[in-house]
Amino acid sequence: MARTVSLKIVDETATIPAVDAASFSQAVFERTPARLELSEEDRDRTIAFRLAGPALERWGFAQAPPAPRPVSICLSHDVIHLPGFGVVVAQDGSVAQATAGVIVGHRRDLSTLPGATELGGDTRLAVPETVETLDRAAVFQPWGGSFNYGHFLLDALPSLVALDEQELLQRFAPIAPRLKPWQRRLLAMAVDAPVRELKATFVRLGSAVHATSMDHFLHGPGDLLARTRARLLAGAPEPRRSGRRLYFSRRFHSMRVMINEAALEAGLRARGFEIVKPERLDVAEQIRMMREADVVVGPTGAAMANALFAPAGARIVEIQPENFASQWVWAACRQAGADWRGYVCASPVEPKRVAWPHRIRRGFRFGYEPPIDDVLAFVDAAL
Image (cartoon, rainbow, N blue to C red; front, side):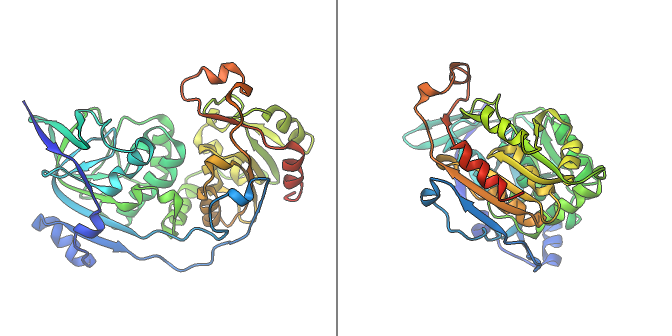
């Protein structure tokens, strides 16, 4: 038998009372809900940036650095957790917004959760009566972090660091779905606490903690990301040289296809750039590579999350199709002290202009064609 609950997403920062640190610790033992608001440290951050491109007027964002988002640590009790999706569900069906934000942002609702059905706009979740129970656990990985490097690096890891800074991992063992080797490597660099990997679809948690930075922290990171960066750099290999020029190629990815990427790579090679496919490198090597870089160019995508590890003053040139524009790479650059430069090009092109091997692959979304000479002139200004 399964118990069915009607799901509703709630903002835990509005429903869980904020308390001070001492009261939060007491709430752990009294099994009452509590929320600890983390302070944002004041420090100088780079605001260096440049924007250009034929679609700049349609970029859609204020030409100012994204403001840091506030972060809270939330304590809840007697909840159901779906490790593979990140969500924390109360007994009445309330879903903590920060744990569901990434999946809703990608899939629009929670109807794709295992055991979920939707009827007339009401999403109901069938929870098995018998599931594994853990006394206490720390939840930190949103759904996107299970497969996307950017979400894991910029949403999941800072959330775990926030819990560790409050010494909560000593009482709440961190849990996650089955991890990939690169995720384990980053976790070992970020915290000195073993992460329990769960195979189960559902687990019951007697008490749980999570940080609201699980929900798209990459779009408005604050000093928490800078502190996460410092931990990762401390555990990463030291740079062996400097002054590298790197291009992060997406030529064999089929989700967003730059149809003239080969021509761009040829122009960059002539300027001394190395053409790199970061996903083929160990994460420690990716970090070392970034620490050695002077200029990095790349289309928007998860690999550009490595901007977080650029040295201060490095120039990061991000090529953005107008229908997939954002500020998150810029935000990561600010925490590193790097100089972000965004080139916004018209998009999409007619699908038939994209080579058919890309179009027939699962996940293909669109193609785009930045003007190569103009992009290279923009890069030249960064050299």
